[in-house]
Length: 340
Image (cartoon, rainbow, N blue to C red; front, side, top):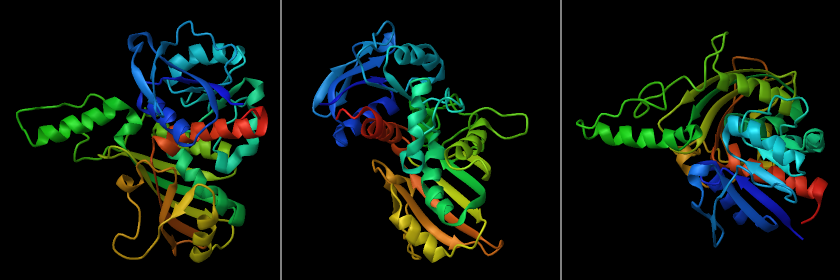
């Protein structure tokens, strides 16, 4: 016996990826509904070898449906998630709306799967920010061994993290550079993204950090350990898909780089590719379409007593969004609902 699944936001990048991953991982689906806004009603989307037509989320009856994967942004989620939850359908939300709600678990299954039982307070589970998700997969097994004191992370985030408009802007601006008569001014991003990097993701906060950076701090504490100190600089780069991160970790006790490498090799959801030779590391373009979070460039930081540096790369539409949401659904099914 399988589940009745709803995918809300099925025409967007993340929604389509959710459908792909549900099919790829053979999630036990008895029935599926694909929802979108009114302007996208009837749009066809793929689910395995099936073609489905989207329905209007407005007025959709969630009664009798088991799990709803939401990829519709915070404003729409604010309206529809409580409706679905009240109808008895567990909402797994990809927006930032519920991440910081004490009554809503924020889950990365490889890291804090046990926390999923807290879903019953509101019938809602939050999916973390894309940049946080891949980092905490790497942090958790190292934290279990040597206890992390502080993390300094710089991100190199793909334009798909800003949605289809971000990808289109990079594409159009890149073409325009080779055809000077076509000028494509910034719309989605604050400055030209083609052949450039922009140290600004989301809005600025009073302390000078951006909200993306704040998210990494708060979410890491909620998912892994509130005692960990985190400082982040988040940068948008001219890449279509795949977030990369340079991570510096300070531990309470010494951790040798070889042991760190061995720990990460054995950790769930991680693939270590770390050869000290030309090309002996993973770049964003190589991780596209993969489920794993890739770790490279593992090395001792000799400037502090107990430090490790590493390079972390993942498909932001997968582990950073759709894959993690489906993994949450799998965890929910295996540990709580147990129908499949």
